[in-house]
Image (cartoon, rainbow, N blue to C red):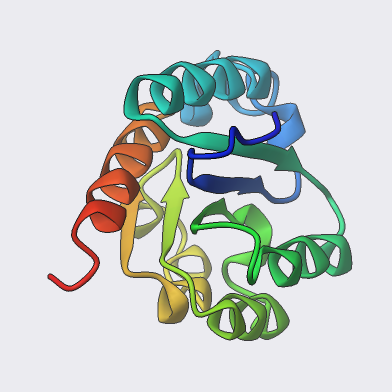
Length: 154
């Protein structure tokens, strides 16, 4: 989706295996697909007066490049780093370099999962983290991002 002239652009990026949402471990991740997530984000963004750039990749380098492209282009980033949450210092560095507000989203509660999933490099760059609320976490993240953009000094 391309932004309108007055709509702040929010990048909504998804990491590896998120394209398998709805198929992969539905007892953990639910039955909603990534297309469902994109439709939800588009609806909420429209209600909030935001434009979104919704993408998914399985490649770390591609995700890092997308994040870097946000500097000077987007007003904020919402990211579900998926498997790169616990491994990617490069992603953390790219997010920090944008100097944009970042909200980290996870469909599951990573703190109730395996110990290795409980550490997030991305959290070091995020103003907030939403986890464990299913795909509604994206809705909450967009709402929080809209609030952050309205009151950036708070």
